[in-house]
Image 1 (tube, rainbow, N blue to C red):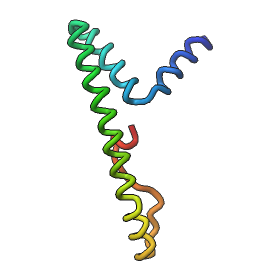
Image 2 (cartoon, rainbow, N blue to C red):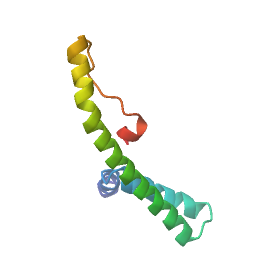
Image 3 (cartoon, one colour):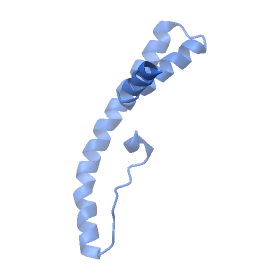
Image 4 (cartoon, rainbow, N blue to C red):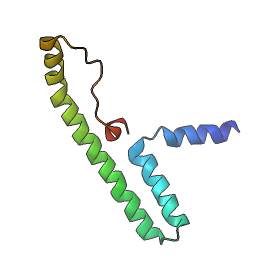
Length: 89
């Protein structure tokens, strides 16, 4: 049981750019897609997640100083920067 849990934790720790395409690949194969088409779909999704992570990283670095300055100048408390579900993924 411990070996199974170690394998599951390893796969989950790979990140969304790897984990979600693996799930999509498995779901595609279970739905009857040919392997090549399911693999290409999973690969496209993995590239999209990587691209979104890069864009969100860039945008959060660009927006963070502005939100900190806004909080400082207005005196409001902004303890977190909300990036939506893609930022959390």
